[in-house]
Image 1 (cartoon, rainbow over the protein chains, first blue to last red):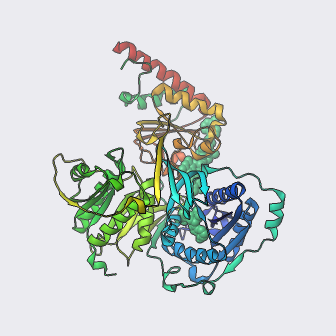
Image 2 (cartoon, chains in turn yellow, green):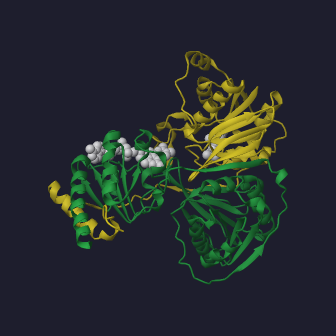
Image 3 (cartoon, rainbow over the protein chains, first blue to last red):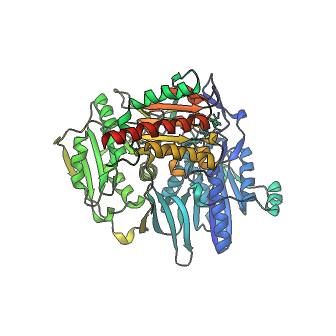
Length: 276
Length: 341
Ligand SMILES: Cc1cc2nc3c(=O)[nH]c(=O)nc-3n(C[C@H](O)[C@H](O)[C@H](O)COP(=O)(O)OP(=O)(O)OC[C@H]3O[C@@H](n4cnc5c(N)ncnc54)[C@H](O)[C@@H]3O)c2cc1C
Ligand SMILES: Nc1ncnc2c1ncn2[C@@H]1O[C@H](COP(=O)(O)O)[C@@H](O)[C@H]1O
């Protein structure tokens, strides 16, 4: 019986988010809050491992109260239990402070049920750092295995996991002791439509919510803004590149004009079938 | 933490298949500019097995000194072992800045090391600057899916760390024979204490196209309509000897594999010529190709944002224009062949 914990985050859908041109901040109202797309794959993988080996899938998030919705989405995918840590003191956390707070919650969860494996997404689409997963692993002193695109085997008895880590030009097969932490690529699985019973369970699901005072051994100076070594100095709209020349005239003539431009760099073009 | 004790700029020198990866050379260039502005030394940190001779390459590309960890335990990259080298070396010599390439290895290593060093780490930086007096690193990066740029600062902790996107910084022109100081470091890690083992490395059977190495890229987007339509991109690319690129939407539609994707969550490319065909020019796409030498856009929507980011644009239907280009090139290129024969 495996106990797998997936760390998940609710994020604004940055694909549709609008920028407030005056403040250069994201207008949160314009962007629906969704479960971080990479984290759907983290939860799905946890659910698949549960199907393979039996056990429990727990999800954990740190976020404001509305993030309960993201946990419900995980229950739809097949998570059994959800925990949320939510407190003003967590606000403004960078990746270091986030991994600290999540680690405290993971300690508490592991007292309820020992954890065999933690799975995180490759990255969030609002923070886009991919640093929180390895950060948690270091704080728990367990091996981080990033860029995982396949779980070959989890052998709880033997205390080991074998996974594929994606490389620029292939992959490597890595064996690690358990517990360990995986961060997963999108391609690791496809998330199917959720079965009806999960949807029904999710609709009414209430996760366990903890405030800082519910966690043990917390050094408050390591939380939130206070515990964050990095700050955002300034934000600005990305420079708009100036437009180039739009070719004019009938299509034939536009193509001829383009050919003239391109053939100034003739040496770059391969002579098709040319002897070389 | 007494931040005044920390001085000097470091670059983590990543080695793959016995060679320094290009982004590390780019970072030596970027690091050099920061070090000169601040009036400090630039050092490399080189970890691996049999890697010591590569220090000379680092000197030619601007390093004044290189810390070398050359040991069989470092034969293959593992977070656990490499991280120990970075942490020990940092605690011993106290640099104020460490830069890593934003490769899978660089990001993995930096994230782990930053946690133990309890310091700040900026991910996927695209612009670097430094305050000469305070040594404060200004690391700017696209945030919120590329919708905004943010400058990240780490005021009270050292070293200040950043991963930096490949292909954005400029390497120095190497100075052959330029020398520097090699500082050999030792670490004792026993293999039986390492909890991760690399069992096998599997290289993609088909040599994977590296779009970041291409001189010409023909990139297609959602505007090609379907997988069959995307075939036009392949035809054109083949005719002119180019490499195929794609927008994320074309990749997500399943028309082409992810390693062809250009942009924020794909690859950053700087070819000499970039064709954007049926690509709207979303900011996440632009960040991956805007430094290309010559950008040609073909799109039927005159208001497509790509026209604000190209050198030359044709407003029109790709299915009309691209076949004409293919015809013209075929004629020109075969004429060339006949002439050369
Ligand atoms: C976090 C995040 C990361 C992202 N990362 C990336 C990334 O790495 N790379 C990336 O590309 N995108 C990325 N995106 C997605 C990006 O925002 C856009 O959605 C995507 O680039 C759009 O792809 P497209 O231009 O092919 O499609 P569309 O926006 O649908 O554009 C299609 C274009 O084709 C034109 N067209 C249609 N028919 C024809 C025709 N017959 N002839 C000529 N033109 C025609 C249309 O006018 C239109 O402009 C990311 C988004 C997010 C939120
Ligand atoms: N607030 C959070 N709560 C729970 N998990 C998180 C949180 N932030 C990040 N994570 C996890 O860490 C991964 C990487 O996030 P990031 O470092 O922000 O890109 C995500 O995919 C999640 O799995």
